[in-house]
Amino acid sequence: MLKTIDEKINGFLFIIIFPLLLFFMSYYGFESAYVIWIKSAEKAPDFMFESVYAYRVIPNYLSVHVTELMTYIIDHYIPFAKTFLLKNGTVFYHSTFLINAFFFILSSIILDKIFKLKPVEIIQNIHIRRMLHLLAVFFIVILQYVPTNCDLIAIFFYLSGVYFTLKYLDDRKPTDLMLLSIIIIISTFARETACLNIAFFAAVFFDFKTYKKRDYAVIKEMLLLVIAFVLPYMGLKLAIRQDASFFEGVYFIKNFTSPYNIAGLLFGIIALYFGYNLCNEEGKVIVKKYLFFSLPYLIMITLVGLFWEARLFLPLILTGIVLASQKFKNVHLL
Image (cartoon, rainbow, N blue to C red):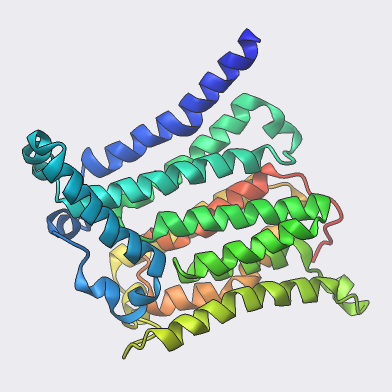
C-alpha cells in the first residue's frame, strides 16, 4: 500500500510538477527575441484573426476569453497582485502561459500513457522510461523560445491521436478508431498539423505488401481519417474568408540562406536522426514510412515556414521518441 502511494506521489512529481516548473522557467526565467512582442501585447493581436491564423479557431477563442477572464479576476479579486503581474508581462502573456501550461501538462500525461502501452523491454524499467519522458519534455520546453497560442494545443491533440492509433494497433477496437477520427476533427480547428495523425496512422498500418494483395481495409480506415480532416478544414475555408488563405509568405530561399534558418534545419534533422537511432528495427521502418507520409507537411514548412522556428519539427521529433518506446509486431520491412 505504501509502495503504491509512493509511486503515485513520484509519478505526480515527475509527470506534472517537474515539467510545469520547467515550463514556468522557460516563460519567466529568460526570454528570446520572439518573446518581446507577446510580453507587450495587451490583447490577442489582430494578425491572429487574419490569413492562416484565422482558421486556428480554438487557440484564438481561448486567447480572447482567457485574457478577458484573467483581466476580470485581477481587477475584482486580486488587485493587490496587479502591479507585480504587469511587471512580468501583460495579462495576455500570462493568459498564453496558462493556456499553454494546461495543454503541456495534458501532453505530459498522454506521453506517460503512451510509454506504458506496449514498451520495449528496456523501457519497462521505470527509470529508463522516465528518462525518455524527460527527454520528450525537454524538447517541448526548449522549443518554447517561440511562444504561440496554438502549438501546445496541437501537440496535445496530436499525442492523443498517436495514443489511440497505438491502442487500435493492439486491440482493433472500432471505438479507438472513432475516437481518433474525432480527435482529428477537433484538432483541425486548432492547427493544420492535425493531418500528421493521418501520416502516423498510415506509417503504422500501411504496407505495400498488403496493398499488392488487394487488402484495402487499411485504405478504408485511412480514408475515414482523411475525411475527418478535410471536411472541417474545407468548412473553415468556406466559413472564414481570407485574402491569403494558405500561408503568410514564401520563405524557401530564406530558409536556405539565413544562418539562423539553417541552424534550425540542422537541429530538426539531428533531433529526428537521434530519435531514429533510438528505435529498434521495426520502429525504424515506421519512422521511414512516417517521413514519407509526412512529405506534404515537410514541403509546406520548407516553403512557407521558418526553419529557425524549430517548433515546426516538434511533432516529428516526439514521434521518433514515441516509436523508440514501443514494441511492434507484424510490421513489414520496406
